[in-house]
Image (tube, rainbow, N blue to C red):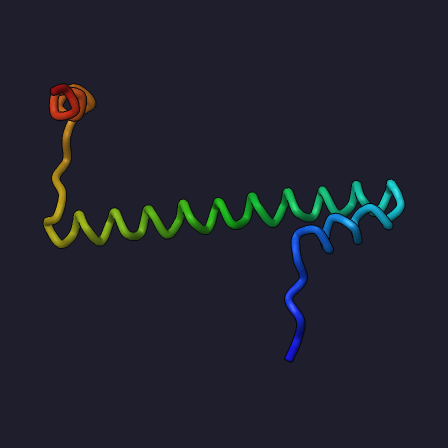
Amino acid sequence: MAQATTFSDVLDGADRLTTEEQETLVDILQHRLAEQRRNQIAADVQAARTEYQQGQCRPTTAGELMAELQP
């Protein structure tokens, strides 16, 4: 069974990288995070479209939304 890597282990490993490797790691992580955000947004949009198609929500204006949020 594989042992789980802790966050501290990852940071220690990153400290052992060269500056260039650390910059590359940061770049890779930023791109992965951006991709994850895009995927989450796409999933949220698909869920919203499904809810709309099933009649679970309705079109509304910004003014109507603000009025609903007011106590």
